[in-house]
Image (cartoon, rainbow, N blue to C red; front, side, top):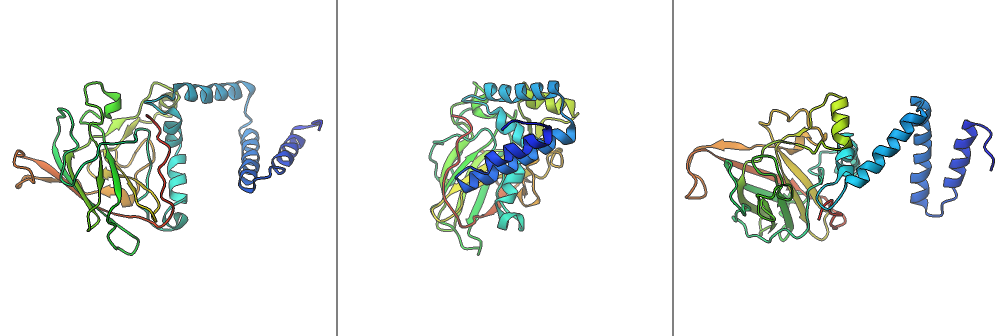
Length: 296
């Protein structure tokens, strides 16, 4: 094929995509060509802008390593990660869902823990927090025997893989739901934190005059055969940036009640203020499989 003009170029590219044997790959690549070519025309993309864009994509790949994933950060900062999540859960976006972003800090092989255990594995300042979560199916029946990964940042907003002062796997744990579908553990109240800003994502936020902060949250990942893997975050209702998450992750269903308390705590060594969090998850029927870890 010899291209005669810019309009014909799109037709040629679409014709090639339509020859793809795999039907789903054919659908995706055809739509990709349509939207990419339309984007170039709508924005009248210059050659310099195209070159800069390619350089940014290459830089995101170069910055992605065992402890950092710039590509995931960019997808979140553009709202794409949340859109994919909401379109694929809750009756394909028609109803409320507990599903949320995986984020760039989930690791495989968190240490096994028993209900009531602490996930604090090295000296970690912060307000003591006691968490109880329940897992049910869509009819409200408890899900026993689900494997639940939990992870969060410390009181400085750092995950342990970002901070040499923290023990390996600090503030991470793997629990099994009991007969009532419950897990419980001790931790510290999380704080909001800025996403890494040393790469293209940081430059984008500066150019758009956006802050880089995520509101405080705890991550959960629950797996049980017969149920779609639940990937979620529960956000602190008192965080000042609950309305302006840099990753567009906060949904109404995932705003938790991080309750300040001064009564008798579940642990004898806790005096003064502490925090309780009680939250209920609903797992949807579907395929049980672990996502690809964004870091090692």
